[in-house]
Image (tube, rainbow, N blue to C red; front, side, top):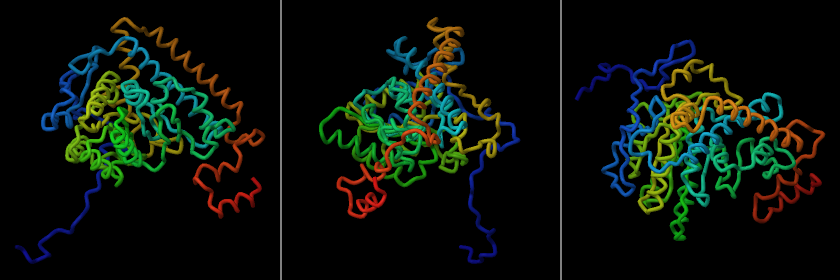
Length: 416
């Protein structure tokens, strides 16, 4: 052993850096993409030892010509494909309308899911209405996949008098129990422990419902993520644990969360979980993988972790400017393409859709969102001080089962 410390160079930490910064030309030529259909689908009761390949390969169904390939695409009927495309289109039209509303000062904050619409819409259609989703702020597609009333979502964004949450939640932090959409928490990774607990409770009751948790790649660095993984693995909880790896957590590249050393799915395998990597811009792959994971959970074979490989096309939120930390051209260079365009091409190949029909649908959904926005804005927007607002007394209600004395006094002092 060398006892002379002068023989060593000073220690240094490794701080991961994204490969491209503003001004650089993005190049994804070294990004390994399996051919569509190349990764086979195993039986839902396959032992974990036989599933290791799924944690590093990427499950893909749609090829570059819009044709479905491989063993994952089974029993997906044409009506479902049409519904999936329309759900994605409506989600994007909604995002566009609400983004404009925020720029017009009608709400304080908004978050789009541009480029990620396939993931949430497909999984919601693959699960049952009685299952429970624990989403973050970028899974509005879960609601559009079930035709949830748009005005309810907009009223919440505007914090107006018809907001079911009475202005107590930030915009886009929805709560719709009837839709199987658990209250969104701005504190990320709480979704994981909540979903695992809900799934375990379902099993304890002898029910058949499962839970689905949603977080982004950055939140995998939170302690709640790891605690949930331990419980899900040990107790084989009936839950789907989704990580949407869109490569950027606000302004932090996903390598900061460990993506540079192993895939997120490979890390999940260490917790004793079935783990998949899926092309998140391929609606058919998203639906098939979600259906497989749901069936595995419902058959008593435990939790499945799904790493969705995608790209956040827009800003993190309306308070973010991604041009400060990544090239503007990076989204166009992303090799997995746009989920709406890819499913559209597939439906055209099947002669179920056309470019003309697509243009008409885009106009139809833009008109729908404009009309729904006008209806919601009639109830008031954030800065319309001459319109009725949720009562100030709501600040004190629905927090404690029995209101503490100090809050009772504060409410009396406010006269509400």
